[in-house]
Length: 525
Image (cartoon, rainbow, N blue to C red; front, side, top):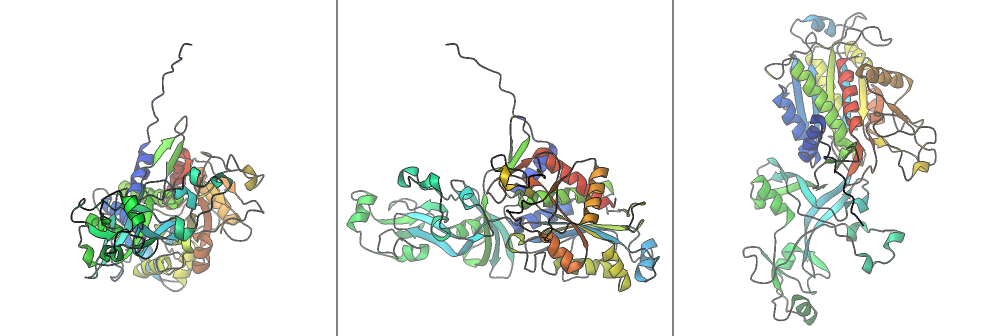
């Protein structure tokens, strides 16, 4: 038989946009890293980072604040300041004809479902495995985290009151039980959250190896099947027959542990582990984002829900800044609401805003979540700085829009019956317009028309998403923000498969389509 060989087509290359998204995801393994990365990138194109404890300025330009794992950024346009420019004098008044600035807010979130490091996380099993204790965060697909190399990342609070960001490389893994030890596993995998989800991060070495590392005893006598690392390190139990047989004839049971996750994070941050007094540390997939598919039409990555939306808003703001002097000096943006659209304040100065909240996966009820006061406070302070109060403030909110951008569901090829029979979102056919009769999404008829307009001007397609009545959908920051602010809100998002997996997938064109729509939304069309 003659072997047939075929030329292998070269692997598709990522576009510049996808490379940028991949770099953003890699730099953002936790919500705290994501918020800091947003601020860092915007400062690089002319934005000014503000301290919430200081007054907000009225001068035209770009500004960004970071609160914990959330970042809010906005551009004050020319003509809206309190320096005697066109929008200022009118803004302070309450006359019906006075032009007040309006907001175009892209709302997204920086967190993703997964695991969070517990206090006193380091444990050692009786058989010498060093594990990190974790708590389930949100609603992840637990099985998707098995057999992956994992990172730890987040913030450390130090004894002097400072906080630092830190991240490890691939140091953890949640190993699955071999099929030989669980013959029925393919009939249904059942993971106990407490017992089966703690990552392995190291193993004890025999006595004499790994000098300088923590000493630990692996006998069954140390607190049952596992014990805290420091407890194990202090134990001095006699070697039992069973343990001796596991360790090998003549081998000492006392062994040396390779440290713990918090020490590794402290080392990565360049701080003394003894100075760490608190931590907010998440687990993240260590695999780099990448393309796949016969034509390279798919993109796979961790945290697409919802860093894909944060990235779309970030890139759109960066482009506005660069196009209006931000790359070389102060940002002088003069965007206004387009003419000829019923119900819109034509000619009003537009304040584009990126609101990247934390804790959406937990319900958003926190000081940095959408249910908290962050966006309301920032919008109010911006308007106050611009001299807009009372009736003017109410008119500004009435003329504003919030585009709540969060991931949605593409039709799954193996489970098409779980979707609405008439509305089948397809990959690379545009972002999703999310609709729900029970206000799980905030989109209404006016919002549908507005999103169609923004996509039309951008020249990109979009597609409706509605749930199967027997499979209720989740919710987003959209209804929360609409309720808190009274702002007109549209729920949209990037279509995914494997949502809430450790590694999700989407279409490459859909990523670019979403960014294009956000770009026009910020411009006031």
